[in-house]
Amino acid sequence: MAVTTAGVVDRGLRRTGDPRVWGTTIGAAGASVFVHANRGELPSTASIVAVVLWAGALAAYVWAVFVRPRWFPEPEPVRGSAPWIYLASVVGMLALVQVGQMALDAGDKVDVLPAVIVLAVGLHFLPFARAFHTPMFIRLGLAMAALGVVGLVLGLAWTETAAPAIAVLAGLVMLLVITEAALRDDGHAPF
Image 1: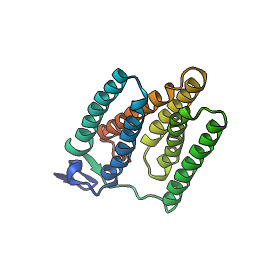
Image 2: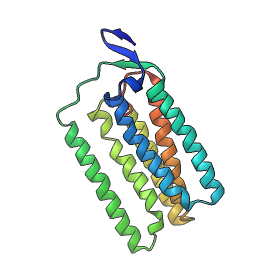
Image 3: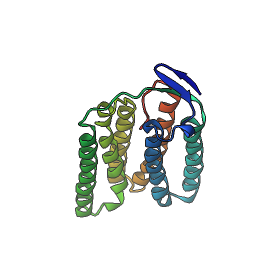
């Protein structure tokens, strides 16, 4: 472990208390839920491919976040409003999912709900970028929100299988964005 006045080069496995490490586990768990909760709605071959891609993305995540030595600068202090921003984002996400579910129930399109969840999760990430000094949340939030919209449109207009397929893809994208942020060594916490 190399120490400097402004930070340290270390492995995430030795820094599990750092939010740039433990926070990623929340995202990796959520990404895994997206993949495994939705892959069963796909044809069997696509479901197997989803598991293989998930395993590869998860292995890359573990290597980038926990194994590979990387730069950990001193974390920037977060604003006092950060916990409130987090709470409001989570409440907004849950409210959007609930409203989306009610609208889909009314239209007898409940099978498209995974796309609404992807959209809501993506939007809930956007305020985190500023609150936690982590620009990665903009990339992640916009990618997830865009995937949610695509899944919703395709699920309503074409096939309901599009929504779970997009949810699986969203889980893979989450893992890859977290991995990419850890590989940057720019000091911005992936989560």
